Amino acid sequence: MLRIGCHLSSSKGYLAMGKEAVKIGANTFQYFTRNPRGGKAKELDENDIKLYVDFAKEHQIDQILAHAPYILNACAKDEGLREFAYNIMCDDLRRLAYLPESMYNFHPGSHVQQGTKKGIAYISGMLNQINEKQEYHTTILLETMSGKGTEIGRNFEELREIINQVEDNSHLGVCLDTCHIFDGGYDIIRNLDQVVAEFDAVIGLERLKAVHLNDSKNPFNSHKDRHEKIGEGMIGGIALSAVINHPKLKHLPFFLETPNELDGYQQEITWLREQYISD
Image (cartoon, rainbow, N blue to C red; front, side, top):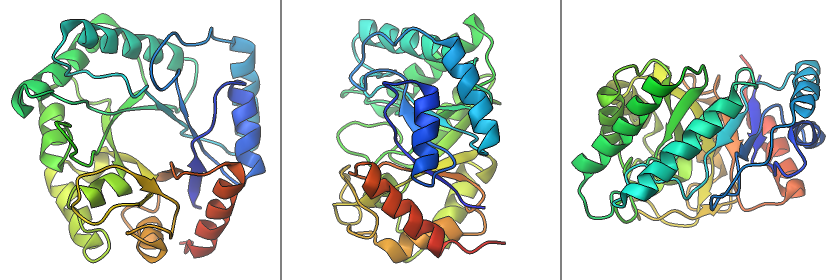
């Protein structure tokens, strides 16, 4: 069964997101834990969460993906910004303890001319600090990035190094973004099998927990990050349908982050379900 969803607004709560997902034919979804540019999260509504959990069980929605705000930069040059990232992640993980089978995705960040080695040390240091301060069961996902500017995560090796430097990394995984890795120089059009094999050799496929399924406005190896609707970008529908049908990927949850409203997401989900080949 294809597990497919899209990014939904969390403004009306979890139950509302669950109902929107079902309405457009999705059986999972992604959402921001708070305003993507930062700020305080809404107060937890435990009744809404309970109603959502019951609704999710009824409609077979599982493994939803919480996305950290974009402003979170665990390897920022400014110590205050790094502390801000730490506090946000701690608060988000505390909240996610109320949601079974949820995962938490974040952009590793930008080292801002400090160098990749120092940036990776800051990221892994924050994750080690979180491990020391609190117990949680949410799987944390490092997202693959396109390599624009001074981003960390521009290749599989950088993500592997972050994982290596986290003392208890049993809870760490990776979210693979098709737009990002294509823009970053991984040719998923012509060499998807090779890209999957390289991921397995460097990181290990057991760490791959989710896929952001996006087309790209930019050409291969451009090191930019502009998502496009499925089939309307430089990757194309044929290559992306191959991703959802790849024998080592098809069991994963897929999340659309394409420039769409709900009706556009519904059309993409319908089309992708038509392309999916069941076991």
